[in-house]
Amino acid sequence: MKLYGEAMPAPNPRRVRMFLAEKGLDIPEIRVNLRKGEHKAPEHRARNSLGQVPTLELDEGTCISETISICRYLEELHPEPPLFGRTAIERALIDMWVRRIEFQIMTPVGMFWRHAHPLTAALLTQYKDFGESNRELYARGLKWLDRELAGRDWIAGDSYTIADIALLSTVDFAAFTGLVIPEEAANIRAWHTRATARPSAQA
Image (cartoon, rainbow, N blue to C red):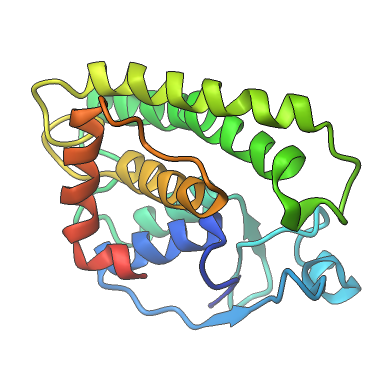
């Protein structure tokens, strides 16, 4: 089994590395250089036709892409500690929060990165006004999440889960692009301090 990924600041490969660190698993990672376009090379497209990372290649040749799918597969093999929940309600709530993070937080970060950041200007036609409009959407999403976090330590309840991993990888990548956590979002800032203190955050 091997993982095709990329170093920081790429958020999605980091998500899987953090998950592996929380599980205490060691899967070799083969770095795919995004700036050199190695993810679009034919040999990688044979593993992932969308030309993206991460991709997990199993020993018998099956390739699994998309971070949550990779992590779900690994959770099935290594259920402890549970990062997708133990009970039906826990699993449903964690799924809910992952989806919310992806749509409410990660989407505006991605649109800002694609359409307003100078590093992506040579890769696509940018619509900078649209890109810049995502600053407000990102801040609004974090302020909403800040209210939701009142009274609890972690995104989906009492335990650290894949939902926290999804948010940490997103917020840290957002900071790399120039998007910051609003000053008034005290619950998010406290959560970020807790999450960053975990050894897996260094993955």
